[in-house]
Image 1: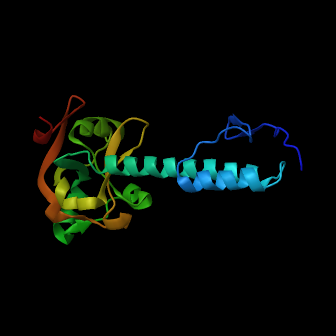
Image 2: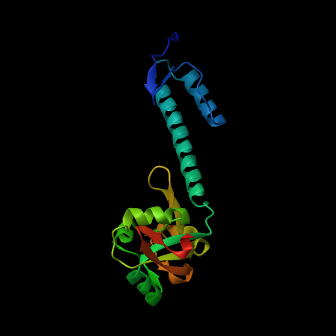
Length: 198
C-alpha cells in the first residue's frame, strides 16, 4: 500500500492551499467528489489539483454572476421620476416632427441616448455646452415611459447617469410621447438658466 505523503503547496488565485487540508464546500456534491478523490485516487495524482481549481473557479464565477446581477438590479432601481435630455433646437424640432430621435453622433456611436438626472444637468451643460452657440432646450422625460430600456450606469467611477437603450439594449429612438415638458435654456453671465432647473 502506498504511504500517503504531504502534497506540495501551490498558489491558486493568490491564496495558498494544501491539497491535504480541508477544502470549502458549497454543496453536498462537492463534498462527495472530495471524498471520492481523497480515498480512491493515488497520492500525488493531479486530479486533486484539477478538482480544487475547478471548485474555486466555479465559486468565483458564481460570485461574479451574483455581483453583476446585483449591479444590474441597482441600475434599474434609481427611482427617478424624470430624466432630462439636453437637446439642440434642431434636434427638438426633429423630435416633434418625426416623433422620435436617435440623438446625435455621440449617442449613435455609444448605442444609447445620453440623459441626465436633474442634479447632473448643470454640470453637463458646463462640461459640454459652455462655449456653444447653439440654441438649447431641456427636455423633461417621464422615466416610466422608457421602461426597462432606461439603464443607470456609472461613467466616472462614482456618478451614475441614465442611458436609454431601449428593450434588450437594442438602441431604439427616444419617443416624443415620453417628453413631458421642454424649456429653452438661456445663458446669462456664464450661467445656464431654465425654469426646470429652479
